[in-house]
Amino acid sequence: MSWLLPILVILFLPGSVFAARKTEWSLHLDSKLEATAYPEEYGEDTNSELYDLELIPIYHWKYLESWRFFAKPVFVATPNNNSEEERYFFDPSEAHIRYQTESTSLQAGYNLITWGVTDGYNPVDIVNSRQYFDPLRSRKLGALSLLYSQSMGNWELDLIYIPQNRGSILPGTESRWLPREIFVPQTADNDLLLNLPDNLRYDYSSRQTLGNALDNNYAFRLQRRGEFVDVALSGYEGAASFPFVEPVVTGTIVQVSPKTVIDVDPDVLLNTYNYRIRQTGLSLVMNQWNMLFKAVGSYTQSLEDNPNLQEWTNENVLGLEKTFPLGESGLLIGILQYSFVNTEKKNDSNLSITEIFRSAYMAGGRITWKEVWGFNLLGLYDSIHGSTYQQYGLSRRFLDAWVVSVTADLIQGAAETPLGVYGKNDSYSVSLSRSF
Image (cartoon, rainbow, N blue to C red; front, side):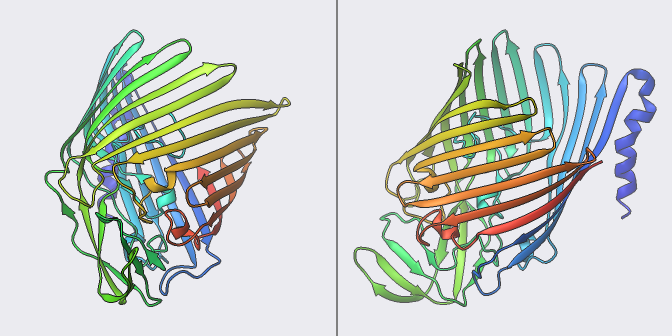
């Protein structure tokens, strides 16, 4: 713990030394204990329960009106996780210094960038790499980057430069979130299906990078804010947020047409490849008739010459959001969305997050009551494969700072489909949160 004292000195020094020079600072801590149970067995050595401790310190520092420092690192401990790679997770997340004037700002350090306007599935929110320990609840990784913003009346320009992207992190080898029954890899001819054994053993090879996918990533956004309509044009060139995964297997061929089906031997090696993409996106929000109309569209090209990658992908989301008052003490926010995705070639891979949304409907709502009770409901329907995802959450605040939450996640679908591959990962969790 010898490293702790210097960090605390750095955190508190600005407030004590420069207080007379109009310096302000604050330090808070968000904490959460969570227990999650998975009723169904899925894999020989995967967990049926997990216990998490999450700590997020939040530090603000301000000098005069121009200088800001913000830090919000994330630490998660899951000591009983059978996947060694997932037991302890730390990410700088946000740790940046910013200089700002009335119309410009320059920000350097670790940053989280959120672009786009839709919920759950946001095609243009791809600048940050992600941690996919739970692919349905992925977590953004802080990008060491330089951000420049310029305001020009109703217009705003954002420029981002990432010298070295980190690449995303996939589930650990003993994770329930890797296929355990059927693996449909992405192949050039879309003609392969792997039947997995009960005693499956995954292993990752060293991560590989195609071309210079992680080097010199950059992005821009130009947006205009109007009285009723906000529009944003964005662009990105850099590493894809989800790497290409190639299984290396041995086994017995049991079918050759219309798909090649292989009964796989227990040891499966996963080769992962970061690859470079270029994307252009358009986002729109319109406020009419006391409703928010949302639309996001993107066109993405792979910049690598690999027959297993999609040469182009077009992703689109349309959404409605409306707020309903519930008497004098309650509020309901309702959301309805539809997503549709077109690609160069068909892709049946059940290790593709995008494929879940090729033609999908999502409806959700959040009810708050007296700023004490909260109830969340989310439903997703994959109209191509008939798979569904449902999430129910109930929370209760105590003594202003304590929150108890109960959540249920229910997934249904065939194991060879992009959402149904997680069909045995129904879970129930309870958590206790505290802010200091």
